[in-house]
Image 1 (tube, helix red, strand yellow):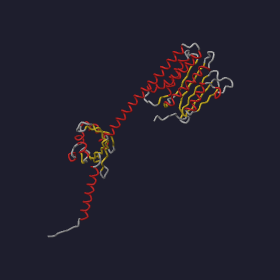
Image 2: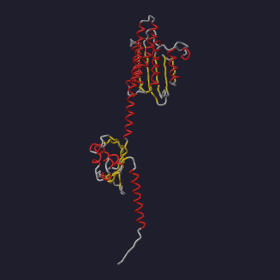
Image 3: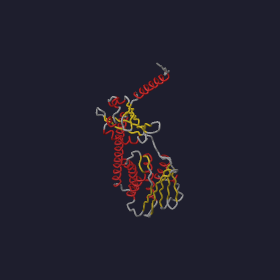
Image 4: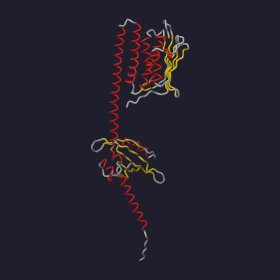
Length: 356
């Protein structure tokens, strides 16, 4: 009898170390608060962590050998099937997947499919990592409901503000009709137009999808039509021309700019064309990357009186324009008296006041 004895201590130690490493790795995977599994190319489970026991109430050993469709159900599998095709082409994909639990509740999972490649780089299946995000989805749904409720309340606020302003405007209009003095009637009409200018902002915001800002282009267009209907019943005498590009602004900027345009146009209608003189008022609105918002109002009327200083001699209307642009909006306003009065306004930044 011939006996050959070899020392395999190193091999045994290596096997023991590898076994300890596997147990440690399994302990880590099983304590992950989610699902970890491995699937072959035929979409059958090769491994499933203990998370399947916690989530689905299924023994992980029973999961092994089953198909994705068997474990997840036909409806859920139909949703994820396109992702299985992508991962088997070598793409890593992440998606949200709602799953109907055994108790009938819907659980939302954030699932990642990660390609499983051999040493040659060939895809032999993929790893599945799923995290339960049901609580996060519930929180998101609650936030959406809260935002919807606030949006409804804000729309109602804009609507009621607009209505209240229109009531005040109507009362002023009725009162002005009983005034014998034509100048007083005109003054009442100016006040009414200022109120309508602010009410129009709230109407635009109420109708807008974005409740915090509005587009100046249609707002100015409606404002010009309002002034035209109020002062220029004979539209053939003074023609209005308006060119504009889309300029979205916050309500903090829209209201003072509306008042500024109202004052400039009212001033032109009142003073630029005396004695039923015919003329034209041009309004331009644009935004440039370096200069910001630019508003130009030009008429071809009689211009300013001789030696008239706008900064010193202006009445309330143009004083309001200068004050709103420079002090409230932080912009610049300049006037030129050449073949009529020309005003150019530039705003390099938007006015914004924090609400909270």
